[in-house]
Length: 458
Ligand code: ARG
Image 1 (spheres, rainbow, N blue to C red):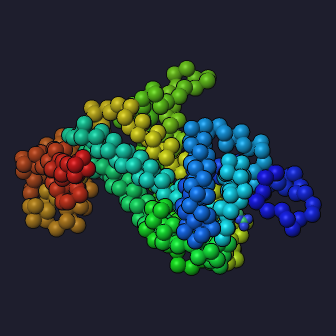
Image 2: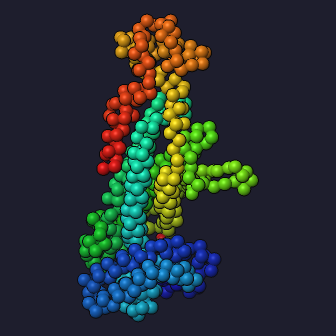
Image 3: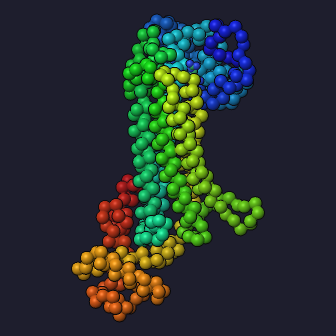
């Protein structure tokens, strides 16, 4: 058992409690940032005369060696599990002391694991946040690229999962591009509040060594320093903000997954999943299942659950650090890993799926999806929309009974309902004409979609 305390205890810690209490098994992934933070702190201490120049040089050398070891041999951390460290901070201090002797024991002067772990987490999450934002941007690019490969493909648009109005497939894909753009923006926004340094807050009340916190902040690339030590040691808002943004991001991925699962079913046949991201059945030889998408949809539940868990951990905490806060890590790491993996897999799905353009276009001709356009046609001839709506409802009912489309009704058929109809109605009902009319900014007209594509791909 390697802990950073012990003098005031006369009995050895219970073995089972040690396992219960330790966090090294999951906070070992903070080793790099813990070392980087420690290097900055050592420099801060030297500026206050705690280390001489020469001592600092040897501490920094020890820390750099350790950094190199954990980077180049990650298995070293797994091996260290057997050595019984209480947490990553104990591991780093112990290893440093092994390398530089008693000098290592000075590193924690004025520092607490409370401001240390808060700093580590921010440093770690900052890097991960940047990776996540670029994964989101990659997926946005993929959505836009697939959209640009099918610029004129028409598909049915749905509301209530009922065919509603025809849309361009590219327009559909770009709707997710927009969601992802907001998801990335939320992370960038959270990053601004995250990038503030808590180190130098001590256990709760401040640093008694007079370390220059601004110096530490600039060493570690923080934009500023926290203003209140009590808040700084127990603030995990940045974790909640990330987990919340990740939850919403996962909800978007889950909705896309749900769409694509439907679209690759035999009922829809709009897309075919790539073999690379599909699985088979152990019993039914013909099956090909969209497991990648189902897992993304399923994992969204996990990420939302992590957010709820985290908020619940925080809600009853008294002021300052409490050990409950150790529970922040597994949930945060899990949300991070899960979100990043889902972003990668979704991209693979999109890159490997095949689009059945004919089937989509054929389905877009069905179900009277141009009925609103027939009503608009009557509006163009001077009829009030509400009246036109009713009239077209009757025409649709007639067409359903005659088992034909609006296109297939003859002029005489139309004249039984209204004399306003002329031969130009057939042009107005054509799918491309229908699409072209949706030319408001953000609409599905080919021009609008092309403009959206251009800006997405620029
Ligand atoms: N492993 C601990 C955590 O993750 C580090 C901080 C411990 N602080 C303390 N006062 N015991 O929260």
